[in-house]
Image (tube, rainbow, N blue to C red; front, side, top):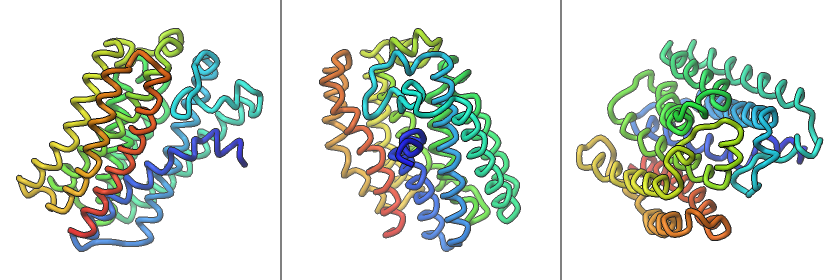
Length: 292
């Protein structure tokens, strides 16, 4: 059990739950909430997240990337395949099984909510299967992850409750999408050399750590700007400004990323703070909708 929990990166699955909570909270605020649909959505998205983690683990075993990475609590894979704690065939089978569970739940949600779920699910499924082997080599991996395991989850969770997609929920999905992208972006810093040797072509490889640090900083600050502009435009309730509480930590993290981008031991605390910022800001966004 411990080995498999490590393999599916269970500690990162909290992100999937919180993203569904944002969409559910926004729907509840708008007068629509079905507990069964909410629970089914959480389970479906969690299984999808597990699937993409397993596909990534299997692919990185094939290319040898995880054998060359400097493993950290936030990057470098689980190490299970390298230590022969699991067989590659087990991981590959588990990746397809978990994706199938997510697919079946998605079909049911589409039958009770609308065909639009199929569109979101289809794009998410394609990203899950082809992310590591293709998208991560085409310099679109970070954006694809932000859209599918960020914005689309929030929009989809809202749609299954309300049966509609409006400008308000699109605004609500922007910051979570960027945060998911930034979670991946910063975690790429320790793995640059191994990823390059494995044929990947992500933003940190292409632009280098210094420019990538600037990109990270601009995008992170834009998360809070979206909150403010969304409230000014009346697309989001004023109570979501509670999300600004993580701004001081974001500023500290930005300073560390800019200053220590090329010094891994000193950058590691920033990676941990980045995880906290992503989860805490998404959670505060949920609270903002609930009290709004």
